[in-house]
Length: 358
Image (cartoon, rainbow, N blue to C red):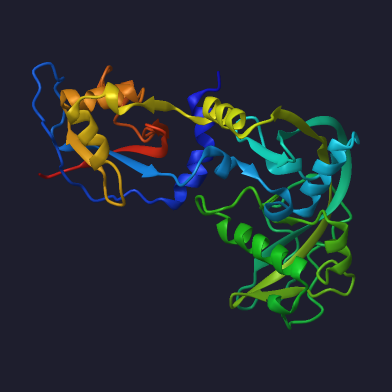
C-alpha cells in the first residue's frame, strides 16, 4: 500500500497554487458535546474542499509531445521500440514511484519511470558569482563557500580583472542568461536562511551539462567577461571545471491499462486518500462538506468538535484530530491534506487551525 505521506507529495506541489485563507472565522453547526475532550475553544479547525475539474486521467495522463521536453518523447518512442534509452545527467520523465506519470499511445496506457543502471564520472563547468562592492578590483575568484569533489583546472585564482566593464546579462546567450539567473540566486542566499531553489542550484552556483549550452556560452570562453551585471548588481565571474559522479538512468515504459476505466481505477488506488458517499453521512455531516467547498475559508469549528464534524474527520481518516491528544497530535505544522472522492467527484481537502477571538 502506498503511504499517505508519499501520495501527498504531488498535492504539496499542485496545492501551492490554492491559497488557504489565514483569517479566522467561526461557522459551527454545534460546538458543544458531552463526550468532547477539553481543549482550547479559541482555536478553530478549518476544513476546505477544493473541487477538481474532470478525472484523474485528465490530471495524470500526459501527452509527451505537448507537455514534456523532446527527450522524453524520444525516450518513450525508443523504449517502446525495445531500445535501451539511457541518460546521465537528467532523469527520464522526471517521475518517481511516489509521483507517477502516465502516457497513452493508441489504446494502451503506460507507466513511465526510470532505473539506475550505472555510474558515470564527468567534468562540468560550474559558474559562481560574487557580488562586487565599491573598491573591489578583483575578479572575485572562487566564492568562500564554493565546494566540489576534486575541483580541477579552476581559473578562479584571485587574479585581478582585465577590465572593469561588466557585461549586461541580457546580452549573453540564452544558456548563459539562465546560468547567471541561477548563480545569482545562490549568491544572494549565501549567509541567509532559505530562499535557494536547490533543485537548480548545485555546488553554490550553476552547473553547465549540456554540450550545446557549453559551446554557445560566452562566460565559458577563454576571453569571456570577468564581470556581469544582473538586476542592477555587478558580479564577479568565477568558472571552475569540477568532477561529478552521476547516476546513469534507463527509461522504463510499462503497459498498465487498456481502457480508460482501468486507468482511472489504477489512479484511484494510488492517489485517493479518502472516499465518502452522501448516503453514509448524516444531514449535519453533509452540510459540513457543503460549507467546506468554494473559494472561501471553508467550514470551521473550535475544539471540542461536534459529533458531525468528528464523523467527517474520521471518514477522512484524519483521526489525529479527534481520537488522540488533540493538543499534542493535531496542533502541529503538519496539517491534514489529501484527495477525497465524494460521490464521484474529486476534491483536494485541507485542514488547518487558526486562533480565533470569537
